[in-house]
Image (cartoon, rainbow, N blue to C red; front, top):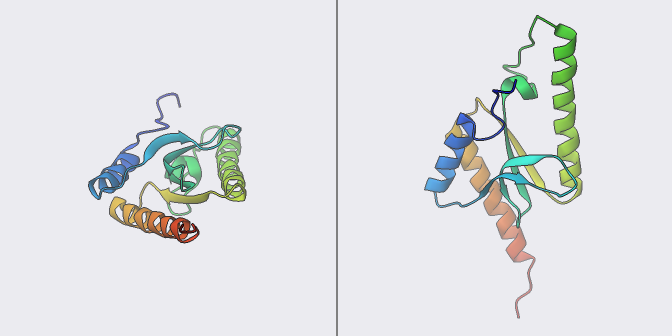
Amino acid sequence: MSRQRSRDTAPEIAVRKILHRSGLRFRTDVKLESDLRTRADIAWSGLKLAIFIDGCFWHGCPEHATRPIANQQWWAQKLDANIARDRRTDAELERRGWTVRRYWEHQPPESVARDIAQVKMQIGAQATSGRSCR
């Protein structure tokens, strides 16, 4: 497990390249809140937008998740705990005002990047419409 990448995975890089090419700038591997362990793959802290690109195996993709046969009980507990942690993290971040989006590693990077850009634009429009002009 020590060889498993926790950041800069191929799906993350593919999405980031598309976002960057379209002119969007962002931060990567971002610690979102000082008292939470979680780190977003891509984030805009000012907009409170957190993006996670989850691996199918580690995060329990409903289409592609598999469970190892060897040491089944340990793996079941480990993978179920990952899924539960993801749900808790999402709920806590949303409670603190963050918009959280999760994507699967198998989703086409172009559609993921398009969706991220759209969400960012919507949040940015809401933020600017809430400001008063002087």
